[in-house]
Each structure stands twice: as C-alpha cells, then as structure tokens.
Length: 331
Image (cartoon, rainbow, N blue to C red; front, side):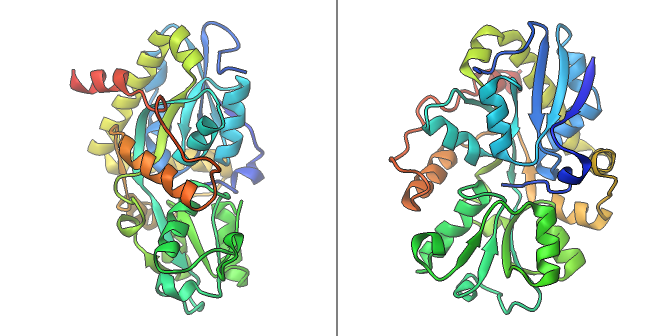
C-alpha cells in the first residue's frame, strides 16, 4: 500500500522550502519523508511511479511531505518517519548535536540560485552591502552557501555584526510576494523557486548555481535514516535504495515526463502548476544523482563553523554510510 500523508494544509504547502529513534510504528510500515521541490525529483518520481511500492514488497510505504528541514528532522527524531529526503544542512546540524542520523545516499546536487529583485540595483555579491537577503532557514544549506561567499569578499550578515541584513525562515513561495512588494532585496533560493523569480518576476541572477560555494559538488538533497532503523531494518533500507536508484535512472532518461510528474504532484498538493519553462530552466540548474560527495559535506560543515552557525569544529566521522547504495549502483 502506498499512501501520501501531508503534515501541512494546502495553504502551508505553498510555503515550501529549499532550506524517538527513527523506528517504525509497526514492523511492516515504513514512513518516508520528502519535500515537494524540484530537487526531490527522485523521491517524487519514485513515489508516483510506484517504485518504492514495487521494491518494498514486505512494507506498507507511506510518504510524508514537509515544508522545511527542521520539521523533517523533528519527525525523524521522534520516529514519525523512518527515512527520507532532506537538505544536508539540517541533517548535519542534527548529527553534530548528537542526533541519530546517517546519510545513506544522495538525490541531487546544485539547485541553489542567488537572485535579486529587478529594481534592487544588486547585480553582484558586492552590491549586497547595505541590502537584505532571505533564505528558507537560519543556517540552512543555502544560507551558508551565500554567507561564506560574502565573507570571501569582506561582507558579513547582520547576524555577525555586518551590513547585510538576513531574513530567515522565508519559504520560497513567500519570496515571490516579498520581491513583488519590495520587502526583500535578494534571495538564496532553492529550485525551482529561484528560476521562477527570474522567469516570471524579472529577478536578476546574481550568482548561477554552478558558481555558488560548492555549487556542483554539494548535495542539495541527501537520503537519511537513523542508525537504529538501519541496523534493525537493513532489507527495507536496501529495497528503498533500489527504488531510489530506479527513480534516478528514470529522471535521467525521461526528462519531459519527469517534469510533468513533478508538476502534477505539486498540483495535487497545492492546486498550482509551475510554468513549463520554469521547470525546464530550473532542471538545468541541478543534477539528479546517486553520488554523494562526502568531502563537500565536510567543507560545508566547516564553513558553518567558520560562520558561527556551529559552536564546535565539526567532525562528520560516522555521518555518511553509502555502502548499500554503492553496491547497488555497481551491480
């Protein structure tokens, strides 16, 4: 049985983000979390095409959608989900706080675009001096990527006593309204929301996705579970990863149907469709993949420490275990 569960109302789902021990509530039920975002394509395709249901023959698979990584991690820590797709930032922060979480694979790289409002006068990072930017969360993947680049040119956010104002916990759909109303000058946005601002609201591209800090190597989405669930349910984890691999392969070979599937899924949740050109252009700003760059995750964590998002120097030893997915991809 394959069910889709929502943790939020339809209205809340329009505020989608970029940026217990994990055991199942019953032995044959597996709850998988994801975001209804473009870089969660593998999760959405695997769900909609029935790959998880086909592979996980001994389990009832339920899908739970989340508006942001903090809510996802809360659900993982309380056992409301067993595994799922999330940005690396929340997962790393939880791990460094002593939380039970392990990365078992990747789902996408890239998908961060830094844009500014059309009439803001911001065309380069240097232009952000004295202006404001927003991100889905304080210390989220996109926030760290932008702030480490600002530090490289001698600028800091107001959080560090600098001249660039940061507004956090701004869901991507809200960024559109804030741009239109002039309430924010720039954004580090996950896809497809960054491209939506460019294509539909004439936003300026300040930094392209592949020029963002670790833009091509840093996973924008990782697959995580808990060590407890992995140790007690290795077969279910392997079956889920086989479904994930099938979904990634499908997205690589069937781009047009993949984008249609994602748009249909978003419509079912929000009653809103994104323009096809937005999805097509946003798709070019990310890479759906099974490859996890563990070194990039460490670099990102170190950058978080340097920016005072993390108190202690991070050590990600034990955070990544992709042995099962590596074996599957080598078959």
